[in-house]
Image (cartoon, rainbow, N blue to C red; front, side):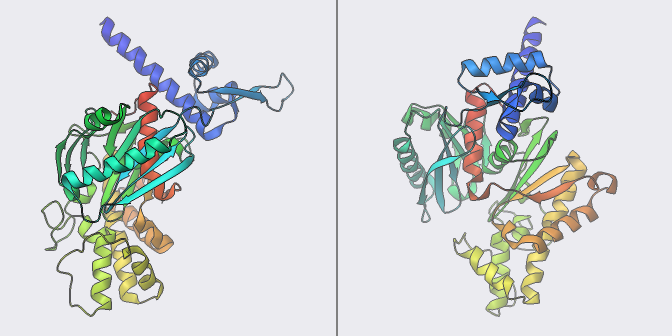
Amino acid sequence: MRSLVKATHQGTREHNVRLVMRALAGLGPISRADIARRTDLTRTTVSDVVSQLALAGLVQEIGRGPSNGGKAPILLQIPRDARQLIGVHVGEGQVQGAIVNLAGDISHRERLTLDGRDGDAALARLDELVDRLVRAAVKPPLGIGIGTSGVVDTSSGTVRWAVHLDWHDLHLGARMQDRTGLPVYIANDSQAAALAEWTFGRHAPAKGMVVVKVGNGIGAGIIIEDRLYQGDGFGAGEIGHISVADNDLLCRCGRTGCLETVASLRSVQARIRAITHGAPDVVHLPLADPDALPQCLDAFDTGDPRVVQVVLDAGRYLGRMLGHLVGALDIQDIVLTGSMTAFGEPWLEAVRSEAHRSALPLLVHSTRIGLGHLGSDIVELGAAALLMTSELGLSQAA
């Protein structure tokens, strides 16, 4: 029983530190009293946590704020450059990374194309990118966070299966740690995106959040009670490979009818090309094309009703899936990120309308579906957030 109590106390301490860090990151400069009010922690608990963070160089006093009649409060903030973090995104067709500080500011970026590489060749490209980032750091990095597509066992840093990279049971974390001598943490890219929005995005206080990354692939990251939920097999959020359509389009997972075949940028690209080139129907999805988005946006902006219908249909399929998520999880904050969000309000409205039509009205009425604000760096920021929270004793994975 003592070990259970100790574990409970440790979990409570980590939870309290996460709450204080989030308040400092999102609301700072801020006083101890305001942190207590925002987090529902006692002032004594906040003071204890702030003292711990100050000893680690993770919080500093910057002077006094305005007084409401009593003694002016001391304001606190995170020293933005107290640590440097390396965040990496292994995406489709490229690997890209950034040097990030504790506030989510990016000071340096690197990007390398994969040019069709997979397996060991893609791994070598990733090594080259990481080496460049380590050299570019102006102080020893805290470590490396990597977000990659596929099913990822975050606890061991193992990529269990990444289809487009042809990685199977790759012990990426241990391998990269041996190469660099730095702590390394690995997560699925959509789960990393969720950590980015939760840690660095400016959102109203909430118990949980679902972040859906909609690009050439589709995946969701799920935050429940301030923790990243990954599921028993680390595959929670793999919504892109749930069958939703009666079609013969072969998905990258080897099945047909998956959400990615009707709601991803690749599927929209294929249908728009069929329209503009006069093809009768879509018989296969194209490979990831870096020029697909601007081409699709140009076609959409012409107002051709057939093209508009393709984009809105993609939004409706996604919205139907979000309705199912609302029914299963009852999470009221859903954030959409990725290249498909570039289609803007018409696409977003199609997503929202179908989500509201597909879920129990009592639940979906309170659900907010909006766009993320972290841009194309979201996975790098999320990988850095995973590193930060894990290495500084704020583990988020559940």
